Length: 96
Image 1 (cartoon, helix red, strand yellow):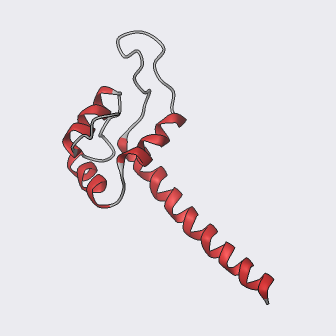
Image 2: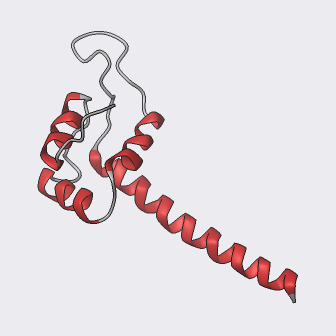
């Protein structure tokens, strides 16, 4: 089982994976992780990005910033809300 990391340790772990904090500062990232999201969900979006195949950054993500992960998570949230509203409207229409 994986060790539960603190927010600071998570940010350090992301840096080791090649994730940068240019679009969103580390302090804003900490606040976002504490208030809006949990790490495992956010980390799942990393799969959409390529890793460096060789060299000094081997295994690290190419051009991946925390801001991109944050934006994907926000878009996903709004999309889920829209789909849920649509499903409820469809369910109501079918029943009527």
